[in-house]
Length: 413
Image: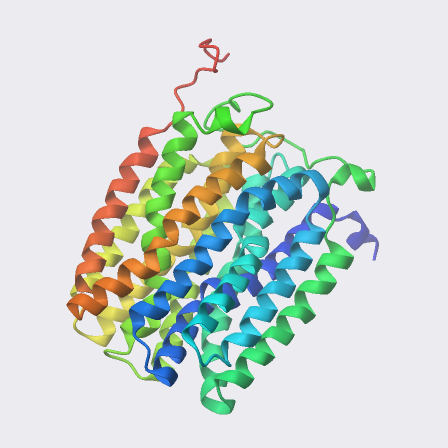
């Protein structure tokens, strides 16, 4: 008991955020592909038309990320996580009962509200006040929940659909979401360490690409800096291509695989994402986040090329696992870069704004893949375009490396 009492409370916040991220990703990011396939199969609607609803899911979420980031910074994460859990559960429960196209759009919009309150922006902003030295590690560990959600969510949703039907499965998933998120939000998660008589985690100096640009930023000024502009551009491109593939992965795999192997491949993709996140968690506070981001994006481009050309199940599964190594870190690295380069005091509003831009770009991904698939009858062309776009993003993120000067032009000491 004494040992538990000696654990810095910030790490309990990390654990709670990990579980919140697991629910949000299982039912939101990774669940969307299962919903897409199930709705198309049961209704006969086109892939492109349903993909538009998933695009709305990301658009709604993107618009809300600025108030979520600022709100968590000012009043704390509890009301946002509660609202996110309720919205996600309601949307998921309803998606199994749709019988009109407009129902799909309304329910995905509701899930978009939930996703905004449970995704990386909410988690990273919740953790920002609690850590200084180990902020990279804390965000990386909490983000492991996203990989866990990807490993468990789609296989369980697919299994449930086969065993008890899509409607019963989504209702059960909604109940689980409420059972996990509500107690964590109400009983564990807190706003700031100062509220508990604690201070932010210290004990040494972490790796920094450079000194934080200034102690307190006005969001509009930050949005004009090359550092933030290049981060938003690069990760906006990368997230669009990644979200699009994740949304269509189940449909893509049906060309070669049966349901059980599809579920296993989706889980293997998420397991690879977990491995990638674990590697980042081990070194996040000792490496250049921008160099790491560039490498991750180039690996993603390579995986898209292999997926586009794959003609056998083995190669397809291998390409999905290679892609998986990049999935988690494309979402984990942006908050690390922003927190490291702009500091904790300004993180919530700045990352909320950056996340809004990134997710607006990401919202294009599902429709990009879906419309090209419907027109061309294949995923090959969109995958090759995605590979090219990620290579461009890798160059962009490197172009924004800080030059070691402060805004007033004086070189740092």
